[in-house]
Image 1 (tube, rainbow, N blue to C red):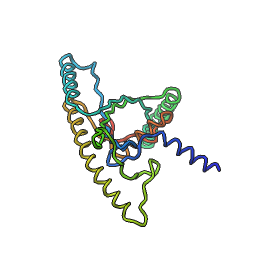
Image 2: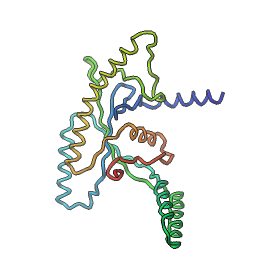
Image 3: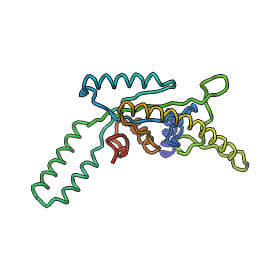
Image 4: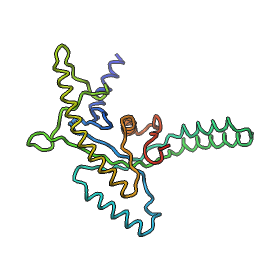
Length: 237
């Protein structure tokens, strides 16, 4: 009884999520549109000289004026997961031969734990969402039938058992997806190149990173399950 109720509640919650699936480093929305997300490294504008500020401002204006498709800029604040940092500290302690340094590491790690309990450490993440709406007939901005879901919790795949219809439909959907993905990739490349010309670092999020990002979006009260390693200039090794 409890299990059935939990499944029902989960299904009702998923109805509120617009995401159908994540595939090919792309978010497929239930209305048939596609999204790719670029994470951008920040820059301390106030520390730049007047000339540098003018150059950055002009480059940003040129960047925006050159865009003729939907674009969304998001500044997202997220909790910093310091578990790995503390773990590294304790590992460092094991390699220390000085009892004094070992004691200082313990005290510092304990200080960090106590500080985190009272003050959530936040970092800002800068994201650009690039959209693509497949054309449908004379209506203009319409929708396509998205490819079958690769993630069971983001929609159920259609079944074509007993006939060849299912495979044919999947093949046609895959072809349509690849065509639309190519168009979206061109837009994303334009955005990334434009950001680089401004002097910013930009990284297109991949499947696992997209899933982690949206997990954090829909669970803002929790600390991240793990760091989004490899994303943005600070995450690169």
